[in-house]
Image (cartoon, rainbow, N blue to C red):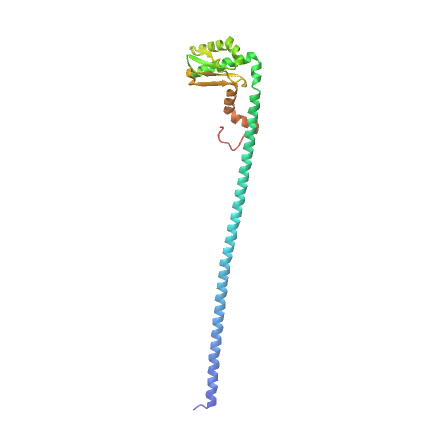
Length: 227
């Protein structure tokens, strides 16, 4: 049967309503999908930037921690250097005091004479020369001339079977301000053995420096070698 205009209009309105509903549902579906994708992308970007921020501040924190460690290490090294400087200064003061007391040795003439004999004999054994020059203080000249040289030469001969002619250098005395002792020289001053009291103290101080440090400051647990 032929449809009336009213029926046709009715079906057209029905079809338009259906199409509009389909379009609305499709639009809602697209909006929902877009919202979902937006939410996912937003979450991804937020998480990504959150991780970047965390990484940035972790790096900053490590840098701050490193700077603190470097600062603490520098301060510790500075403190150690100051302690070492203070210790070295104290050792120098101790050695200076020891040098100031060397003159006490010469006050006992008998002991000082025996010491001079030993110093000369040691120098003779080091050089093993048939003739040597002795330098001494002018104040000790009579002591050498009267007994020290003959006794030292005899002791050297007894120990080595050698003889040595000893000549006192009266043109070049040792400085009056030193505490005592002697210097032995070969002809032409090519070789010299310094056995002044100051030189012996300096040599002894160098040899005993680790022991001196330990006596003054105690054992150092970080020191591997005693030098």
